[in-house]
Length: 200
Image (cartoon, rainbow, N blue to C red; front, top):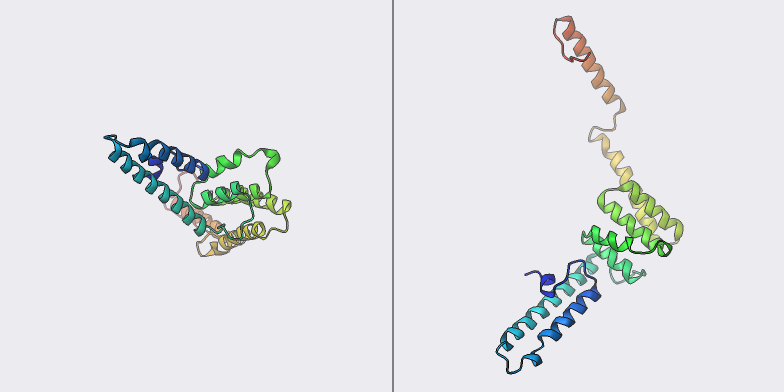
């Protein structure tokens, strides 16, 4: 069963909300409350289930934070932005975006813009990502993470357009050649009494 369902919370719950739900359930089903009660065995099973669910959630979150490029070490942002970046890396873009939107405009730091850039990049909105990364770099020019993200986006764009020749998109004359060929084919067909392209 889903450990979040066992604790009665959503998967978007913060660590504090997870801990709060866990403590409340432990208090509710604590064995001391069921001494000499026919439901004591059920309460003991429920406590076991709650403990397993809580441990599972915390291990998953720790693993996600560790596998993220923004793990515990070397990250100097606030807990909120760290949590948002973990959500982005785990694919919860809607949850991360709603947390970012909740930050008042006056309190939106360079890290806020960087995080929004990460969301846009994950969604494939590269122009928007560039705008947010650029704002982050302008607000904190000495931050290497912001610069690396912006440069990485430019390199990605260069690689895409540079590799487009192999996909047949880079030859500007190619479309003209296709049009000329179709026009000539239509003319020849019309000379022979046919019509290749009816609109011409």
